[in-house]
Length: 85
Image (cartoon, rainbow, N blue to C red; front, side, top):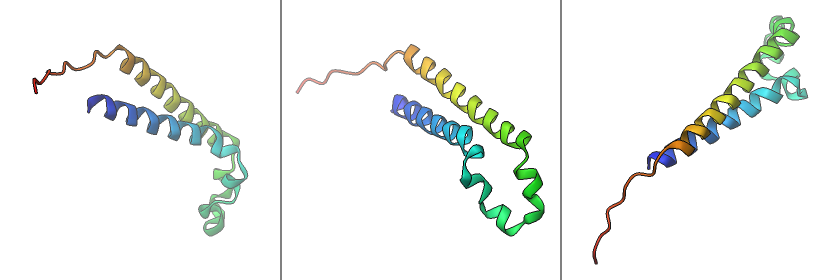
């Protein structure tokens, strides 16, 4: 059960990192909800520095997933009890 939790954590963190890595540079970023309803945010949300910061956060998430994978590979499996049936 512990390994399953770690694998799910690894998958979720990696997927979030991949989305954050590429999303700021896609057309979807330029046509999001906030830009349509709050045009005053346009200069901030479309600024390359913010896009770079979000991409950096995505890269950190991917590195966290890689580190979690290394930790998962080092973990010893929990001992199982043999049941005589």
